[in-house]
Image (cartoon, rainbow, N blue to C red; front, side, top):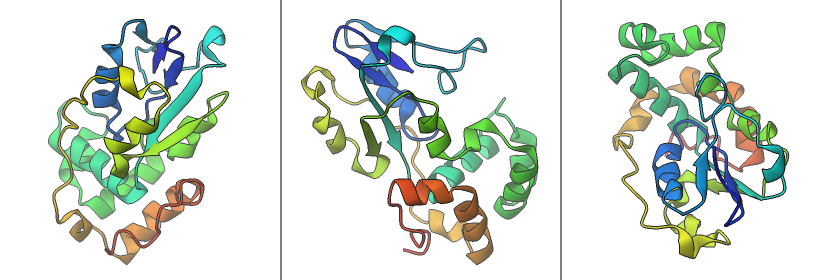
Length: 187
């Protein structure tokens, strides 16, 4: 979470939504501080009391893309939660394991946002960087850094009816709240 009391914003970080890159850009604005929980995690923390009235925003991502991004990160990364499962299992098997283990990085985005005392904007990942221009303090944001490794062009090939259904059911609230297309995995 990035808080800037001088400019007047709170950026709530949601994993695999370009939150690291956006946080890096926001940290360069004078007065910005990173807020973390006791485990030094920036994704699962409470908004400080004196910042609860500030403009609060987050970035949300199509749940099919986000879930696959988490899987790729775990499969290709090191020291990631569930690294061993993602390396040894197919995407479908990984989803089955995930349902049993319940990892916080994989919870619906509405759960992250639901922990906030308020939300003024839920920007869409597919609108970056243009959507950042709609923020009331946009002129203070320096150039957006690298958005990291994006999914390959053929990412939809990892989905079939069964895996899409699992992801849809786990993230139904995201599809409803942020108007994501339940058929986007087919496009």
